Amino acid sequence: MGQDVAPLVGIIMGSTSDWETMHHAAKILEKLGVPHETKVVSAHRTPQRLYDYATGAADRGLKVIIAGAGGAAHLPGMAASMTHLPVLGVPVESKALKGMDSLLSIAQMPGGIPVGTLAIGKAGAINAGLLAAAILATSDEALSERLQAWRAAQTDGVATDPE
Ligand code: RP5
Image 1 (cartoon, rainbow, N blue to C red):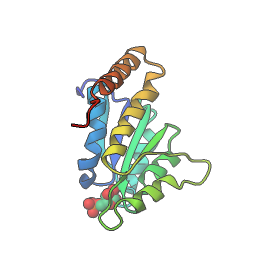
Image 2: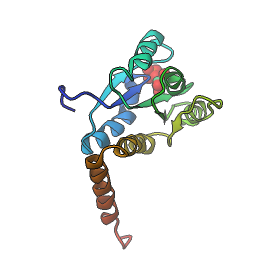
Image 3: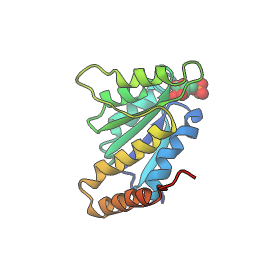
């Protein structure tokens, strides 16, 4: 998004290697005209960066955080533990366990600190973007109309015949 627009959604990921998946969240937000930012923030390798990001997110004007990570994916849960903003977790497909490790790490939060967990990989990243937009659209009529138009176009794009 334009540099001069304050981001409403923060997309964070554990590694630059997650961008291949997480850019799908950014792409859908771009399409829907939702200002967002993207950062590499690792729970394991850059814990201080995570602390600073999560504790400062609300004060900087962010409304939703999308966090993608793979393997022992602590990023979404740790981020959620340090902010009251809604956190959407995207399990990135890992090499060893195809993302099942990421999915379970993100989904199995103990009661009290929720993370809205999406599907593994690209579908999860797209849906995290759509869900973030839907959350923001509850108090933004123009965005709500753009989101509804996007969904209607998707519906119109579904063929009736398989070939
Ligand atoms: C996690 O480890 C990241 O979220 C990434 O999915 C995974 C592998 O990271 P790299 O070794 O590719 O940097 O922390």
